[in-house]
Image (spheres, rainbow, N blue to C red):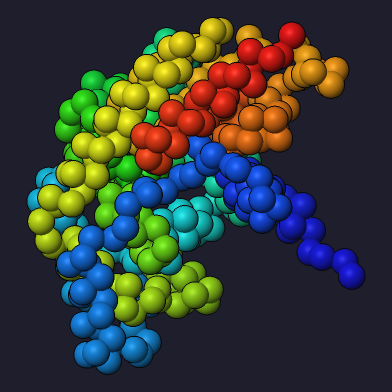
Length: 397
């Protein structure tokens, strides 16, 4: 059986690949400590679950508008105004089955054969693959460790040409935890002002998981607000990963194009999840704040533990729930079996099979000298996992 050549354009996400390997080893009885997990380990808050139960009892069991219930799109607008001082109308909101679908909708609606999309590295694994799927060309711009893995205006300008259609970035960033402040964003806006045909995708899914300051959106800048698409959702900030509710806030033309596209793929997202999302967006953020405080404690602990491991180059992440250490000092070393660790892929697999700790190779995020570790886990598992990791690294010669 011959599959479509479309399948050769993109790769399986390394994050999902590692999850598969981890599950397979766990099924064999191996004691795996998972530091690759990209989701909060907290349960969805009770008031949100109660809203879903009520929605079932109230028979919200039928098809909804493709872009989502009007009440949910209004709730998104309320949230954006309340938290971000951004003014959108419901016809500019498209609710999707997770933020990943929102991103896919945007790229497929905008990008065609030969179009270029600028993506600063490190980046979330799916960005480049969706661009390839659409027939576009990802232009990966390597950012500097010294600048907190944030692209500068001059780095952006150097990669813009007549083919540039879209710029994709996230703040806070998965995997680096980088957070763009107003000064950082202004430097990008100054460049975009001279290139009015470029659309900006601002992925803000980790918005609330910010440890050092207020979240800032590039959509607040008057010069670019009419061509900025904000991507967000409920997975991270509300511990609702399995509910699959994401959304975009976009210029009306783009929103309508994405609604049209989504109508041929999935139509609307789950009706019960939508009703629960209304409650989540309009309710008190106390559970989110408490969750973020727990993440901050875990971040502090994993940074303490990683500091005891030699030859690790690491910055404290100001956002998200990952650390992204440079581990290139271990490249070229050998395992006890004589196998050479050539790169981060090899190191990640070595840690899985020797230390029984899951990580994700940095090459998946466009930074081949790094690996990603998640601290969305208990302090006990963080301590256990980092100690196992430290021992395994010490055994390399």
